[in-house]
Length: 228
Image 1 (cartoon, rainbow, N blue to C red):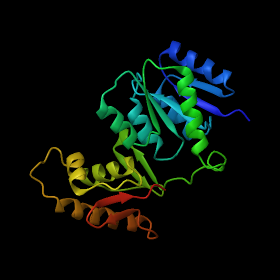
Image 2: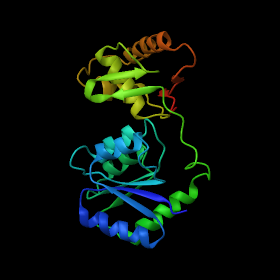
Image 3: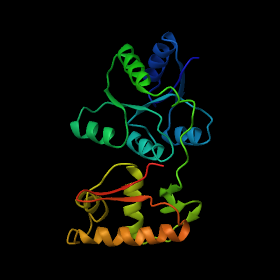
């Protein structure tokens, strides 16, 4: 069976060249130009690709944001395409869940080879069995987070803290990392504030659903949230 590869790239010449290389190598490429359209199609299961080739510099939302939101409901492998070679971009891309990172201009044949390598590393059942849905739904435009379908009544910092954790499912974030990302406008805030807000968040989550503990404590390291 031909494996489906989703190309999310607004430069038509690049997308067509890559699609041709993929078809030549036995893949079934699909092309979208906007990040929001890609997320909508993936959430609705209108397309079920084995791999996503994702441009960082999309015209609506950048590829990093697409990947962050994708990781809330899917583990589909992602390769970033970018015109920037900055090391910090490569680090950020890989930290938010990308599997590889290719700098433009690139060789389509080399990119296809990288796709094959990543797909070979996946368990055979990965593409056949959809990942279980997350109990969380992050609605950034509304600044809301739903848990098991119910809206959480969160303060500003509780919302930001939970949002950061959800954007890095399974990753252990230290108190200092959470301080930098959540309390950047309040540098005088003490790190123990993180613990207090975690405690408050846990209480609000238990009020909605008593079973399980989505937010995990890693002694001496920090906090993480379950990926599913």
